[in-house]
Image (cartoon, rainbow, N blue to C red):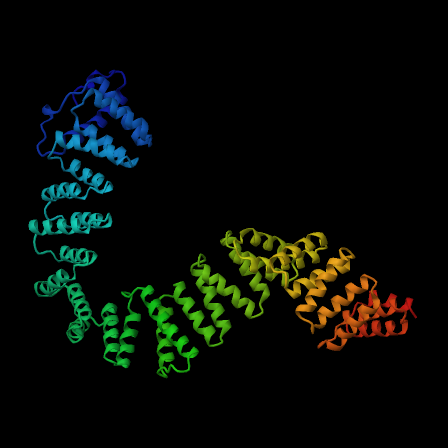
Length: 588
């Protein structure tokens, strides 16, 4: 490029690099033209060259603001240079400054109205600003410069439609047809835009013509069959689909459409056969197969829940066949695996359902519903260790989900892993929002775990929080009362809780035992004796703790013989001999 000779001749390497950059610049400034006359290239002053070179360097490094400033400086030196406006506009688009970009591109197009690159980029900017008419004008100009460029026209028409202007997309396609008529792909694109615009009469007319003009394009026949079916012309649709099936028996989409028509014609055997053919096909998406399986499952579940609904006896067989095909075709599709799990569980095959859910999570660990179902199934199967492991995994994957933290806490409580229980339950409580009933249950479990860890004060606080939310829960009232009595603290509050628990459930032997024990701690021995006697009479499964309490109360009332007998029976029922033997020996 002329004008570069003024750069210091001692820097030969730099000179050659700059020369290369400016050769590229000039080509971009003047456009790529056949038979370029190098003598016609413009001469740029040294300060412009340096400034432009610095701006390009910043652009390459990603320093958009510095590049922009550099190009603005170049523009002050060469205000009529359209390519500089183009450079600035491209940076404005990257920074989402669309109005500024449009301003530069308008000036660039005024300076060089025949430059299709400027016009196309201006269409991009106009589209971002929802200036659809302006975008279409520029696109039609560019389309005329590249007639027959199908991919370009398809891509840009979709961009217009996606931006919210399907009517402009349709016009671009129609203009393409004026330049290069008869292309079936552009016609298919037009049908899509007609559908977006709810122009079903136009779709009908276009399709009716297309199947005649393009008899070898199966897509037109398929859409024509769908249109006939939608307009109540089922027999005509069937004939079109039948011809398509004869041409390609493996076409799953055709088989799916045929299955629907066979069902409509009450030819269920043929419908099932067509459905199986569709399920074998990879052309039918797994999502579609899943939806069909789900509909089957819902119908089966509805019939099982309602005796008045009768089903064909072979519907389970048909469903099983379709499910087997779907599982073989898509072994890692988690929604299909979850349908399989639901079906197996409905038949009582919990172990098989569990395996399907494990496979579903292996395929997609982010499936929250699969985790929830698997944990619930673990609990139902009594596999508490698995429940704890799965709930902990789910809790780690969904750290803001209260359910999994609470399930982990419940499982670890059952496993007597109390430190983990406390951590999980406190985490779950921190995530609960506006669910007083659940919070009451969780704080009660937290109280149980804290008591097991010997943290009685915190346990009492947890029980009180639970009772604030649900004051009439007999089991929480009972546990709180019993543990307060054990600690010998707040005995009046313990009596209040045990008394209220008995009011709510007066025939429960466990509650009677707790009330008796609280009265014993308050030195109200005759009353305690009455309640422990009632507990022994009403107990379905007599426990060692009841008899130990009976012995303690009897001993306090001076009935040492009766006390020793009760303690001995407690040992026979599995009571702690280490604590009971000293009592026996000391009261003989």
